[in-house]
Image (cartoon, rainbow, N blue to C red; front, side, top):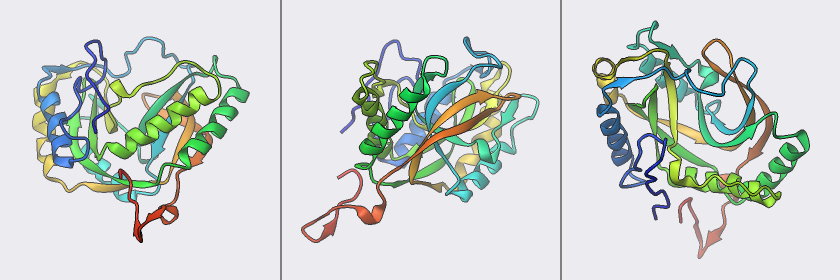
Amino acid sequence: MNPVHHSARSAAFPVDPPASLSDPQTIADHEWRAFSALPEMGNHWDRPGWTASTRRYYWFLTTEHSPKVAELAVQCQQPLPGNTFDRVPADGLHVTIARIGDARQVDKQTLDDLADAARLRCHAVPSFKLQAIPIAGSRGAIRMSLAPWEPLLALHQAVDTAYTDIGLHERHPPQDFRPHLGVAYCNQTTDAERVREQIQPLRALAPQELDVREVHLVELRRENRAYRWDVAHTVPLRPQNALATTVGRTVTPGE
């Protein structure tokens, strides 16, 4: 099953999804090829609508249960010039699952209702493990690929459905969902080929396991060319030992 489809007007990167949503090598190679086609990288922080006072709500995964992923991120950051890239600190590593909205437009009651609805939806989503795979890039960042995508899409759908469960009509379909783990943000226009030469050897590093047990509803802000957040709600996924059994066997995620 591949529910992700190309949008001609997509701002996602890569524009097209990989041929397989489950095979780690296919996903990693697809993202590297897309990055290899870029002639230059731009300033990640040069985005309309963001100011020092901007606050936005998102659904995030974080890496506190996976210290090896943070160690791998440090390895991936080492070749990058500090005057061109802002390295993501260990406590700033995250995977964006979905955007909720501007904090000025989402009141506390709506936020609480959304978290309650997400708890019901996420109870059906088993916890899962991902591979964090070095390394690729985008138009403005260096990042690790993630595989497989199927459990991430299931989680995206769960929090998105919670949005409509509380009577909000806007939805965030998966067409532009490109899960990844950013490790450094480009802070100026720079030659992409030079960056690729610097990070190409990192592709030989072994992937590390990212353990996903919950999803966080966060209030995001920028501080000194870094993303920081406060957690408003944490929604647990269904523990692996709570998976249903069928004919004496465990039903694994994706079945």
